[in-house]
Amino acid sequence: MTRLHYAWVIAGVTFCVLLVTAAVRATPGVLMVPLEQEFGWSTAAISGAIAINIALFGLIGPFAASLMNRWGVRRLVLCALALLTVSVALTTQMKAQWQFTLLWGFCVGAGTGITAMVLAVVVANRWFESRRGLVLGLLSAANATGQLLFLPVLARFIQASGWRSAALAVAGIAALVFVLVFLLMKDQPEELGLKPFGWQAACEGRTVAAKALEPLPALRLALRSPAFWVLGGSFFMCGASTNGLVGTHLIPACHDFGISEVRAAGLLAMMGIFDIVGTTASGWLTDRFSSRYLLFAYYSLRGLSLLFLPHTLASGGANLNWFAVFYGLDWIATVPPTVRLTANAFGRENTGVVYGWIGAAHQLGASLAALVAGTLRTVMGDYRPSFWSIGVLCFLTGFVFLFCREALEQSATMPVPEMVSA
Figure 1 (cartoon, rainbow, N blue to C red):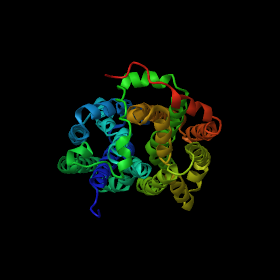
Figure 2 (cartoon, rainbow, N blue to C red; figure 1 turned 45 degrees about the vertical axis):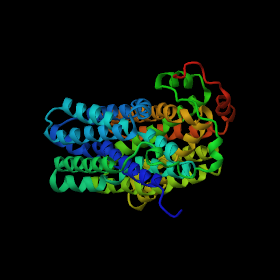
Figure 3 (cartoon, rainbow, N blue to C red; figure 1 turned 135 degrees about the horizontal axis):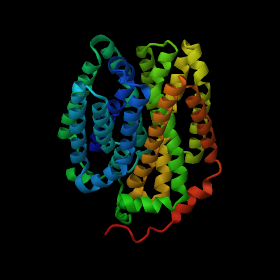
């Protein structure tokens, strides 16, 4: 009875996968200034490749969820890690902008898309009957924290040895995680003769869940649901305000104010550390309180912090540290309540694939924000319009959840159409 349930081993391995693959995807943010200096590429051009990376990360997610059901989590994650290791290693040989777009945009985007946020949802649903919100919070934190935590180390690597050494180090870490997954990852508890963690005898009589929808039928069903538009639209703004704007452009924005890349990367790392606390706490809160009110608080407070960010950058000093702490706590805290509302609206069996499409909206928002902010910086020489506009939109998004109760509950009783796979 005191023996560790293997579900926690799976959660630990998944945490490492999400941490490292997210770090791989975020690496171009710290490479932006060195690539501009060595190759003369503009911020807009580099941002275009990053936008492709972010968009693919989101769009592949729903299909990855379906492939996990068909081919298995372990096999698919191994393929993704192999692609990432090779692609990142090859970037050390690139000479032209199209090579950067191909490797960091398309290949890394596809590889990280397979290990997108849906991986956390699939693992939590398969391996945990209880503590699911807490586990989902931890895994979501890994996905966001990996984008931030390694950046100071990479910035120092680049200062000491150049950006190619940093790329090789990232490729080596991805290869180590490949070995970890090969040795420890399992697809289902039944492979080990186990039930999900927290399974009780009362669960035995539960009706077997319907087979999950395929990605495109799931999208057609979701598009007819008001809940999908509320959750997808809010997640669009979540991605725009995190991965797209702050995750991609905070370092060059700091550079504009004379703040070093190492200091700026340290701010992102601080956000990553506090993101673990904030998102884990959000999972705990989601198990106990209304998801709508949590999302109202997360989005409105995030919007306010972005409105004040230009002033904070101008003042520098300790104020930036406070911004990093606050923004880190709220970075991806939206995930656990969004997943809870998705499960309530579309059923547990369809949570992974529908949330995959909601996650795609997250990444499309991030992609658009990365591209537009980079373009505005190139044209206007200033990031302030981007910070202000997205801050206002986040603030308004929070208030949507005060008035959307009927929309979120309407689809909870929506019958599943005959397009369900046989």
